[in-house]
Image 1 (cartoon, rainbow, N blue to C red):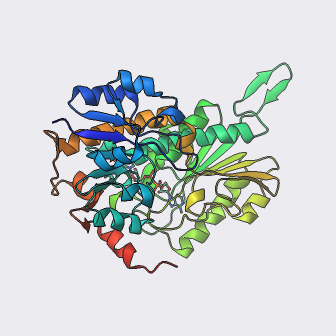
Image 2: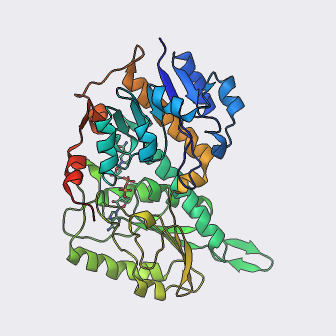
Image 3: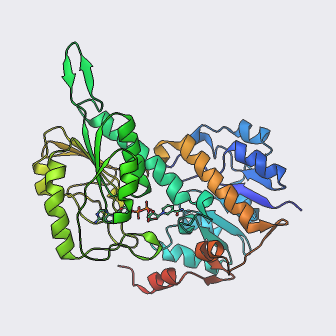
Length: 381
Ligand code: NAD
């Protein structure tokens, strides 16, 4: 019997991505999967039902049938408690789940006997690279952030020599040179800006330079890298030292793009109100950490505001604003993961494999991830 996998329609506000695109469906059908589609699931990303049908998917019009009968439900955004309540015991769910922020949902999945995989927990290793949805979506976000900045900036990005005079290139400063930051650097360079970047992880210096940007080096004299290559929260002394240097670079920039995150913590404040007050009127800050509390004082998540004559754009879920390619990349991540999980039409869970053990947050009635278990013990306010 072919395994039935279902593409659920996203219900989140402003979510326009879809978990699988028709090209991927065609490949999965060839490999022996039966693919179900909730009508209109791809519409937000301009993938229409007809294209899915041509690729071999079956339209399942009744939402509750799709959720309660499919062997694996595929999603992008966090499902609602109501959606989860329709899943059957023994069924599986693959989606972004934000498990640390939503431990109760993971508990609900476990209580219902659902096997749940959280796409943000795919290990950031070379072996898992083609399943790494955090990276694929961060790349989309980094690109889009620069386009938002360019559209809001009352200036050109490139240098221009014209009969009406010479235009100086815009100066862009990228704070945080992870996946999103590196894409923001590359995109700003392609648009002709002069780019500087800073990150507390010194290892990114060469990557920044190889993209044609200048790395702002600040020697912090403490360990800034945690397990897995992620950033650590730095001491107050290091923060003060950082801010002193950043003040001058922020002041001289036309555009500041902030992407700094520390896993499990509120985003660090890197750009203070005093720094913003010193920026040139008309300058732009795009705060990509807005939904984690923001890297910039004054940021309002989901809003574009004027603060001391500077535009601050607090972005939320930028990949959803580029749904075709964001969905194409997520679809590739999901399909690779599925091929890894499913053998002979069955889930094949080898918990000695780090890709399975990292991502599987609920199985056989239990919450598996220790950090999610710890989060469940914290009383909600
Ligand atoms: P992230 O979204 O967690 O954070 C973005 C950036 O903010 C990081 O570069 C971080 O160092 C930086 N940052 C944190 N605090 C800061 C501060 N106070 N000031 C300035 N910058 C600050 O990062 P990410 O893009 O998800 O990448 C995290 C790690 O995963 C990196 O080490 C990256 O190289 C690694 N990674 C590995 C692979 C792979 O091997 N396949 C793929 C993707 C990412």
